[in-house]
Image 1 (cartoon, rainbow, N blue to C red):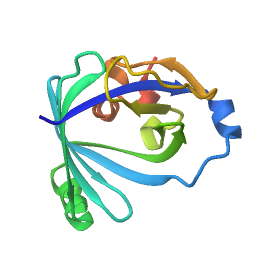
Image 2 (cartoon, helix red, strand yellow; image 1 turned 90 degrees about the vertical axis):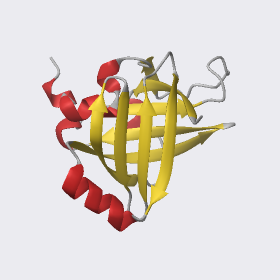
Image 3 (cartoon, rainbow, N blue to C red; image 1 turned 135 degrees about the vertical axis):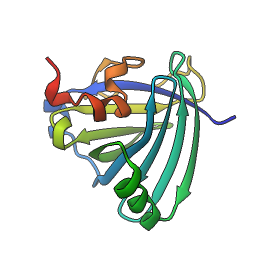
Image 4 (spheres, rainbow, N blue to C red; image 1 turned 45 degrees about the horizontal axis):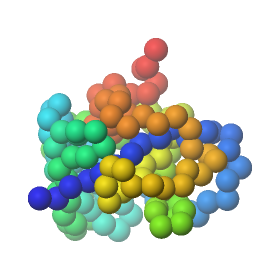
Length: 156
């Protein structure tokens, strides 16, 4: 079974703004299914597409199956079948033995910046860069699928 072990953190906006980072990649991401226990996502980048199926999270772990698909098919699936959608720019930042993926959201989620790190086990040790803020692993409102339904701009 495919498994994802991922921890999620908010990003300090001021420190992130001053951090020297590589170019980011624009992601268009939509959901064909968003239920509490499973999601089916389509993601389109500038040159690739992905179909991803995720299960319910238990701690920082959940089932995940991801398949690369042609970019044109990702666009067609998003245009014809997505029930909700978001966009973001993703930055991949290497820190020692890990890659931090930092998502700077746009549209209805503009102003939200979230960093994720994938791990080999839930208790794996890792270094936290100074631009990382509060941990939000397991907080439902920060799941991308939920951000398409209740965007950051609508939070109180």
